[in-house]
Image (cartoon, rainbow, N blue to C red; front, side, top):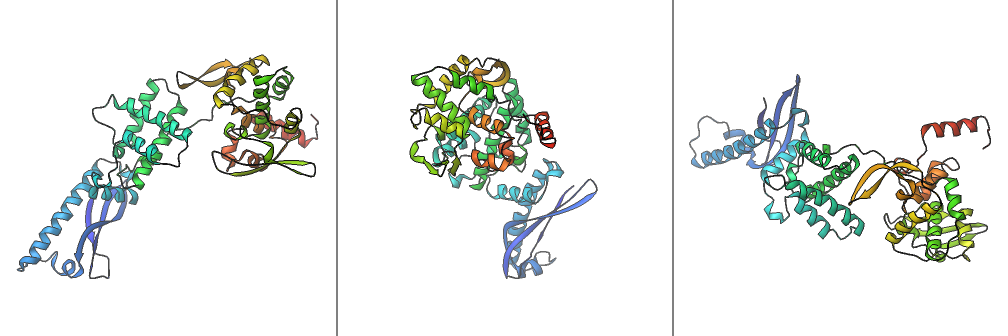
Length: 411
């Protein structure tokens, strides 16, 4: 059972009342305070609010008005309290609940309080979003739109809570979406709702718990033997360009949005060392990376020129053909897009190859030659955790490599 009382805590002659919520949960007493918009004078609160006999009509009217305000917000808070698990009740919950009492519809803001409509508002008005990000958000928004078809009413931002999490998770699972797709959907939904809250819309105090575990996918990488087979292919024209871009991706560890923009004007030479300077398209990070002998070898065979650039879709299509020609046909576990969704299964390895394989290949091939901080610098990852997703060596391989260093075992 919860109770509410009000306090005047100010040295000013007039101030707004403090609301205190008191309750007991699992033998522990809790007292949580929040600010209200009920403004009173210090004289009234100390002398007249609880006085037994008052003859002044103005003071009586003031007390009636104040009591009405106190009763309305108290009833609202207590009703919300009854619908919540007490373990989730904290200062932030009380603040959000008081805010929702004073701003029930947010009509003045002109912002939509429906989740799907706010998705549209977000990617239509946020001019800093890149095309790729907008496409991803539209995919998530379409999940929401299809989910809403089974509901009686539109899905409101304030109702994105643990109940929604369970129902949406069941919906996605029943429609054969994998766990990582669901996890990414929750992440983007939280982003949208947090933006709505920043702009004054009501959100659930359970919003931060609307998430599910993300498991690093079984992404593939190219082995040294496979890279050798790719190098030995007799190719010309567009296919030769694709093959050389693939090698450049593996030796530079960059995204296709970056390596497809490389040109010799970005390269400087310091004694016998070549450096490549550019700005990453995705993160806007200014990069200066050393070029390995293998990278320079690709340029030297082309008269120190980069291959001709091409659309990303064409590269991702043709690179599979090249890997097939190189005999990279082992059946491996992975995910590929089927009918616009990622489907996990066992596939010939060449079918899973895309431009992003370069980053994973670099991180995996060079992990025992350079420190994590050095590799992370070249890939442009900000944390070791984000970089580790790209390193596809198992614990046993790492342990054996360390053991060889213990005993000075040569490869």
